Length: 302
Image 1 (cartoon, one colour):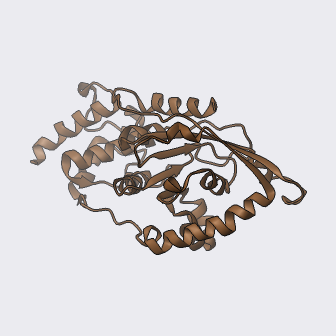
Image 2 (cartoon, rainbow, N blue to C red):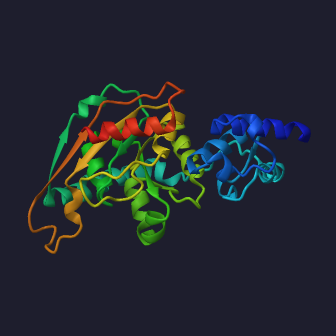
Image 3 (cartoon, rainbow, N blue to C red):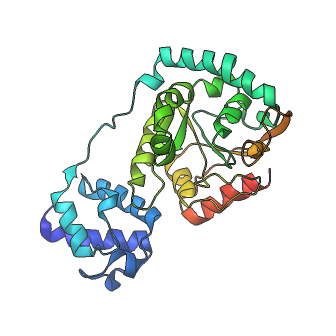
């Protein structure tokens, strides 16, 4: 693409993404201040730049001060799009899957049953769904993945990966990371404004393309209670982009792990997991905000 064609192309792209009249976008227009380009729209922007210009602009390079001219300069020095995304292979291997099955079935799940009575409802809601899927659940405890895995049938659990907070599971709890990756197939998902959130979307897409389902918690943080936090808009963006069924899940009762002065073994706690009917996002005119609210409402109603 010739450089004299790039500015009109970029202005048209920005106008479409931000729902702004192209005539109101100038070379000195600041993306965040003037076009209200938030973190979710930045993901769409860098994705569309890859499609239109064939280069990869790191999302974190688009800051609060970036103007149209600045963005064009970033495009001109950016690297070409890589055709293949490198994903960590060993957690997907047959050996890891066997160890994962044994570890979950004969250690984690029995230990869980010592302290909880797990009630699973409406799992048949998605028995006929076409895999892979994205499972979206509320998030009460860091141990929700154990309970969710226990509630899933072996067909789903055997090819499931968990999107885990990059700054938490892959940061604060890094010393436990090999075990978390081995037994729950966790991969890093950035969630902060200054992180390259798109890398998490790309990794999710790569796993789905290989037939692996993905579980994630769209509240973006642990609530420590059965009261749900508002969902991040990235949930709607992911649902719209990935073209796979979304399985809504409501977890209740795992808050006992936090805040109690008594041992968690002092009594047997009740934990419930309820599955909703699959959600589909085929209407591309549906906004990411509306898609997110639809997912959130479906989970709140369970």
